Image (cartoon, rainbow, N blue to C red; front, side, top):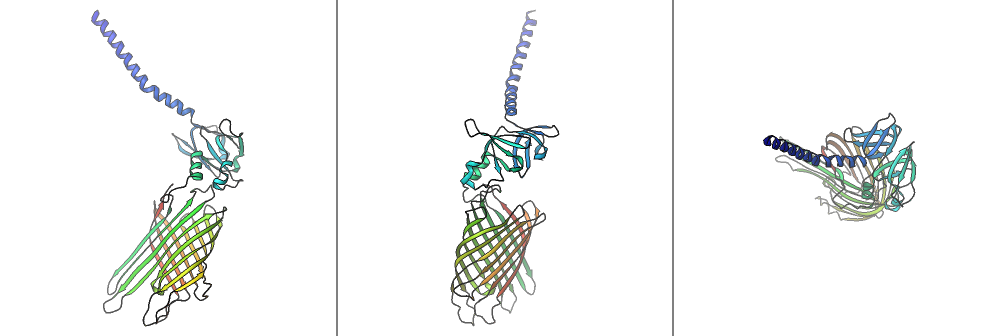
Length: 396
């Protein structure tokens, strides 16, 4: 009897301990789930579906809502019956011009309640009254952290760069030995790095070059070398107008140009800007130095010091199967009208796999006043390149 009683008591105690252990392990999970459910956003669709999760963003009428079960769900405002958020969001009205920090305080920020195609923005208690915006006017809706980061945060110099690096080569070994190497790197950084705010500044860096030799026993070696590097800083004083400072360096062995250096500044205007196309028009006042290679038996060519301008057009186009970059520039000299130049650069990139692509490009340069030589130096230089491109993407 005593043994049976002890056995029953031991079983009871073991069961009690197991129940307590189970409750201790499970209760925090239930509590966390309950707390999480209370802090989730709610999306009610016009077909009656109710989704619990998190509003990610709204871009031009496309609502992105994340749920654990379905991932990111994208719907239009027409499919939304009701939307409620637990976190604070900023609503950017497309009828109101956004100019970065200048009017950031005018952007309504708070929890959202959307119903009957109207967005109600409720700020914190004691703040300004509720703001209502028609859904058709809401160009962008982003969380407050993203807004603060893009408006008030200035990234360090090594972040936020985007662009591409291209490399190509040719090698021939026969009676004539020939090799050619070409490459380019183009980087640009726009602050802020989002399209729903007007840019404050833009920095661009470019380098391109090609070098080659053709050799054959008993004959002189033929060399080609074309290099270009430039940098530009733009400061926006309006949505499409900006002031700029730039510098550029060029070397073209085929035209006898040892080094051309340009230092200048001016203004620019963004004539076209949309999802697919962007066209910038620029004009500068600059100092230009041209130093030429000695080409015997012609006499030495003195360096030229010029005061002139650069009038340029830069186009970027993103299409379904490829992207296009084009630059046209005319460089007159006011103190020597003969010493003008012009160039055109065209690049087409075909994406292939992830960040890799295939690029073909041309560079057409014209130098109206080349150095004296025998035979005469040709004024026009044309170069065709192709190679593998790697897209560079860096976030803030």
